[in-house]
Image (spheres, rainbow, N blue to C red):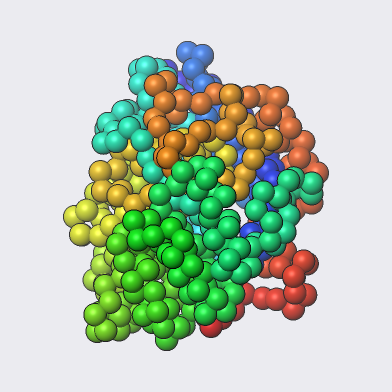
Length: 432
Ligand SMILES: [Mg+2]
């Protein structure tokens, strides 16, 4: 079997005005849907970062892919990885949005190709992707309620706003009730680094009071806090973040995280620290372990280099005695299924994965049959070959039309913040 064609669909999907330490989400998020065709008539799909850069990187692979056997993925990875290594550079760039580090571009490009090839392979052998990559250890994968502080609005100009403005602890509880009521999530994550730390501490406490200690809680300020503030929050939330929760990227860099960990332990607080900012590539994992800076690594097939690389990360974490969770960006159903398949085939992925999926809508979904369904906060591996999804070409065309109308080609949360919230805003780390 040979790859005989590649089609790239640049689309835009509505995104509500969510806040983080990076700034403000624009009304539209950009995605690229990749479609690979083979000479045997089987097509594979994947979903990755949107806009000009990711598309150009995939376009540059076209000649190499045409004629390639989709089963020969390790060789392609080796070639691309060697080329990336030869260009050199330091991967630890705390200031970049995860998924935007230019040095991980190769991993992102490979991942988009690999996932589409695995979809093809699954369809060729008649098995779901998770079974092709070694076999599932679970039939359903848990996701967490991913809460954000947000301004009023549903994004996309006129999309309905399910959640309203969320800028107080009470509103966070309301948002969480709505999300859990709709999807049944059994773990909660709050994106923080937006309001004064006291308000964010109170938000977590309010969630604890409301949902009880059986629901693990995690908080992620995306490096917005100094070591001292991280310590203060870690102490204040010692009980709330225990029992399966974690403190994610409280401050910048491994050195800072290690200091927070050391000082928390000195006070008898064992809250694990998680990261998808200080650790985004393999060389950083043993470094993080040696410093005891990170106890839980957040994987993400989109920028770690695909499903197989996430499995390797899973194994590495297991060998090093570290935990594994999963990061997400704004995404649709194809990414949802790629994340689900790989999470099902990673034995030590024991935390509920992040997902932005509740923030996207039926109106923008590009998979046939509409939105992926959750059952008690988890997604079941479908009994269909490959990723188990097919493209809805009408919906895809609408996504492309929206993309043409969007005035930007790259995510810029800082610019959005200046445009809508504070004309002088810029990202400062640490802010508190
Ligand atoms: Mg994070």
